[in-house]
Image (tube, rainbow, N blue to C red; front, side):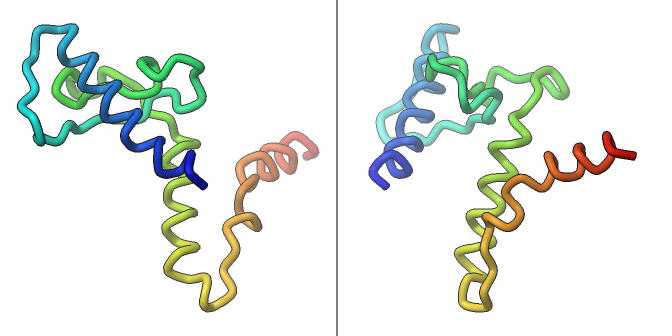
Length: 102
């Protein structure tokens, strides 16, 4: 569970490093906005892109990461009603399999 909490600061630090590499200065305590681009990349610097460096429609986002985040949040709110995100975890793969079978 510790990994879940450390992931956030790693992304913040990575985005700040990327901003600094482009000459942008960061003030202590100031937040940094970023978009997940490849959350499974081995190098943390390639997992996110700072929002300040992205032009509109320039960078793709990691759809699976955002889907997973949405399912986690939904489970947090709806678990009292029996919602289990694992039932929906591989839904796109199931749909692909169904389409391939037809």
